[in-house]
Length: 244
Image 1 (cartoon, helix red, strand yellow):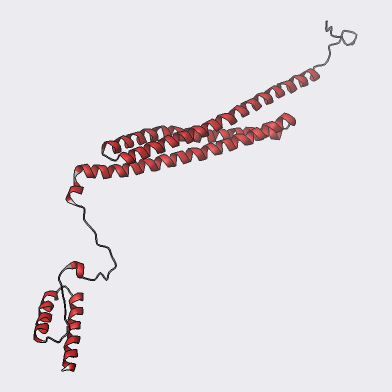
Image 2 (spheres, one colour):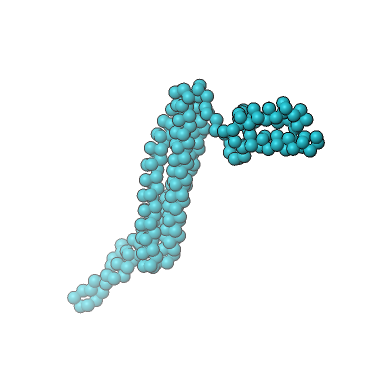
């Protein structure tokens, strides 16, 4: 009797395993297992269910939950669409501000190199320094041109950000709108600081350029005076200039 009991218990557990692994035979196996338990009271109880929550998840994948019907309204979809608009506007805003900061630093570097060469020109007269100063001036002009292109781009980016902030506010995404507006304000302040630094180095550069020009004019005047000989009379005597 004990052996028979164990045999039917083992058979019942096997039925339970097959019931878990196969959906196709779940309902018939449920009936068979119930019949076995009804005919053999001492057998091990078996419980089989058709409910999905009791089915073990062996795949390790999370179930995809569909949105509720109220989440699919036009108002809700407009709000979620404004999230993507704000993210895109914020991304191009930050990238443009970073590009302006990088181009501004490159421009100041070129101007700084030109300032160093001009300081050397004030002390030593050299054609090599003059050629180097011209080359650096061209490089600084190209860097300033790239910077001005980015500054012009930023003007259109600001309009885009302003429009995105307005759209997100009107669609109910007030927090995203405020966050985007704050980011735009910080970007403007950062760019203003960079442009102010550029003005400072430009002022120093113009002052040195004016000094170099005055020094060059003075040297040219002195060379001209040395090159012109004193006038002589018919007997070959030098004529003395009357300084009074």
